[in-house]
Amino acid sequence: MASSASSAAEKSRQSTLMTEGSIPKKMISFAIPLFLGNLFQQLYNTADSLIVGNFLGSTALAAVSSSSSLIFLMVGFFNGIFLGAGVVIARYYGARKAHLVSAAVHTTIALGLICGILLTFIGMIFAPQMLILMGTPESILPQSVSYFKVYFAGSVAFVMYNAAVGILQSAGDSRHPLIYLIISSIVNVVLDILFVGLFQWGVWSAAFATIISQFVSAFLCLWHLMKAEDIYRLELRKIRIFPPMLRKIAVNGLPSGFQNSIIALANVVVQSNINFFGPDAVAGCGAYSKIEGFGFLPITCFALSLSTFVSQNLGARRYDRVRQGMRFGILCSLSLAELIGITIYLSSPILVAAFNSDPKVVAYGTAQAHTITLFYFLLAFSHCVAGIMRGAGKATVPMFVMLACWCVIRVSYITAAVHFLPDIRVVFWAYPLTWSLSSIVFLIYLFRGNWMQMEKGA
Image (cartoon, rainbow, N blue to C red; front, side, top):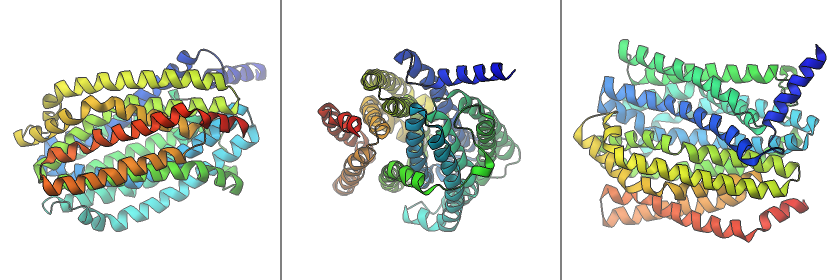
């Protein structure tokens, strides 16, 4: 019996370890569940917007949309930290250093609890002030504040979920997070229909449905970690901060956290400029942002896949596999991103109208789609190279590139251009222009080639 259990555990390990076997097969088998998982995760916010827009109208949809960039600003920093934790765990997992994997896992979970509690207080106390600073229209401000506060009341759930998923993905397991996301997404949609559609509780109830479903997914992921038959198994009595491991996580995670916050901060500025054009613009662009979230899925999944793949293989000192996997991942991401971009470009009027059929709302959302979607390949390249650099332990590289291109240049462009030409399409063009700049910088850095040589000598 023990031999059978050991054999099953070893088989499971071999299926997730990315340092052996066919590179395309390993990356695709990791990326597909990751893609589907992100698809169902995107349903969280999309279900909120779709149901709110149809049952409560464009003003309520604008209230949900107005807080989305601010939510990402706050959540993105902590998610970036757990990306860094995943890189550390993947490196030790690839090297099969069990005691270091265990220390990293338990430090990550302890850090998640602390971050979740901190984020709850920040979100609920400062919600009104932050939304006012963004220039949220007065007509939607009360509903925006109620949605924002309820959403952040469940901060512990989505922070712990991201921490647990980061651990599983660092070990090459993207299948179980997919299963748990499907379950929680179904819970979310059912509760949205019940709370918003049937009970008519208002905008805040959409956020309430989301946090309940996030608690479900967090519990399932943590339960799986506690039952795992591998070196990343979670034991409640071992949960604490290991200072040396916390330093390693901080070195890899803080740049990713700042990077996410930088991007989100720039998007808050973009959202503030969109708010200037009124509730119809906010609702239309909010609808497009939900559609865009689906378009970004292949970009996200291959960037995360590359981080795990590169980190595990550098840990195992398989530099040949790093180069081959890097080329394959970038090619797949660019191809899928552009195919989806073209599809959204052609179908955007129908897709936006699914959220709200008001002609003005549809016009704004369609205009944004027609400006941005054909440039998805640039975003894909930037994210893939950023993922490679994170996996190689060079997280400061994407942080500085995105600070310059996606924050300083983007904000400067919008501030200057809108002043002279108050047209919302000027705001839309901020994205493809800054994606182009970051892609050029990343291309130059990537082909210098010394980033992996430095890691090899470490």
